[in-house]
Length: 493
Image (cartoon, rainbow, N blue to C red):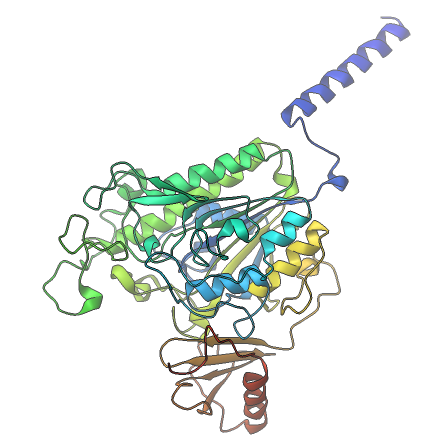
């Protein structure tokens, strides 16, 4: 073959390869010009110890584990609160519960929670302004359809799922919301269970990824798994666990204890915010978390198939610690892991949550970090990655240096939480010191419990008496870390 012919063949081959690469993602751009896609997956009431990568021994979560093995695992990440709505408010606004507008699980209608104010700036609004298409699929809980807290009024182009966190107790609801359209789920009529809502929401989220693969997108997936009602389709995942555990049936006994009485589909007293009875709550819980793990795997698989995984940051975490409702058994599953407490506690088990960040090519694989971070850090982190303007007067600090393994990571002076149930609670962490104050409504100056997390991770040894100067600092921080909020007064109503 002559030199000219050889050159021609090589040029054609290169052109052919280029066309093949281009056809894989027709709208692909050079990596350095792309804003990263962002997928933020928020489990519901998943404990610090409910993933096998964090020590769960009763079942495994291989897809989520793989995210960590190929990415970055956080060991000291904190949720926004110890219950749903304020935790999500802290996430969306970049402010802790002393400043964020929604500070408790308060409803103002039969369906929907107290709305975020119109002037509140959310992650979705920040990213949308930076050119992102934004979608939320799952549970909202920050304002009913049509109010100022409607997700479409808070920066999300598309919302699909449960608007109300109370309605999200049920996995076979009568309806979901597609923006302002009420979607009736045929077959789910309070008696029959045909459409498992988490599966439908998951498929819709996958469709969002496919539709937006050629442009920057922010996908927020506040899953309802494994919150409240324990129920799951009887499929191959269920079959793995059906005969695995010794069970304690829940909800179908004659007890008058409200925590033990189920509210079944088809019952005369059926209520959309109740929990169904469950003969095998342990098997069901394991199957539900495994189902969520499978969904995470399918999201990652789709990103890879579309050729956009290397330009997509995937974050997985949970909104607070494990719950006890509906027959859940966090003691059996060791759901809080190495820490003490669960949902509604401000001990570590109520607010320390798993967090994994995966971004092939940008986050070095198989890393762990003990950087102390919280939900309010997510907004400034994503804003920096997106090249967006970070809002002023927030509590969050960008974690980009931690994600990328570079120097210069700024640290918090302290973290603050307040909880508006169970007679009021406050907590502060600075350095390795943790302060917890209970019964605030009865006594705003109630004694502070003090723990040294460096050698007492379970918060079992109250060292307040031995450290009066640290306690005094905790008192000051609890008094100065909050502003008054007329919608959520921090006192007994």
